[in-house]
Image 1: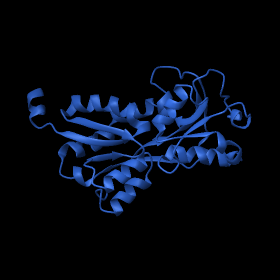
Image 2: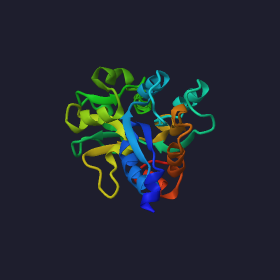
Image 3: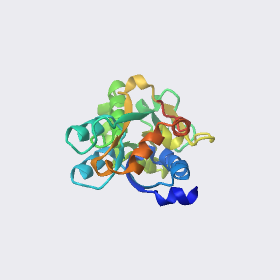
Image 4: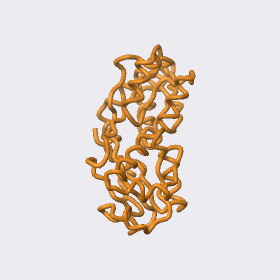
Length: 237
């Protein structure tokens, strides 16, 4: 069986939004065990991947942090029409590595008790855009903007907070919600009513169109085991 699998095994070049890198690592192990196919994963900001794909980067599959980018890539001929689907609904949290720093209502944002708030670049990262929407909804955009530390991606925003370079920051719930473990530090799970729904879509790119392994990965993402992993990291579906 193993020999039969490896004889037809392929490698899938995957571009994945930084917030989904952790869940994908777990899914990849199960996928490889089930199919023999392996993944070559690059994690980063969705906007950056869009620019790379348009410039000819040889990715087979994109796991975006939004639904707009896959639609755009299809419209522009860089992705396969009809292959896109929503694999997760992202959840935004305001997080601090310090216990007790962030309250459960997010009132700390208006308190003036912090010098730096980390946020992913709103022009490149949907979670950064969502963070800005929250500040605007709370009427705090002008007051907080001078304190913003802009990161290239959501993973860099997380690093700024984790290392203490920013006291708090807007990150993805999946980055702090490790399955089976309590969330460290302190956090406010931002009500979805304060930001636009973060629909995260996957899409088959033109480079992966003739690769059975790429199609197999997208099919596996819809399976019950994969969905269970995605939910365990705090995503909606």
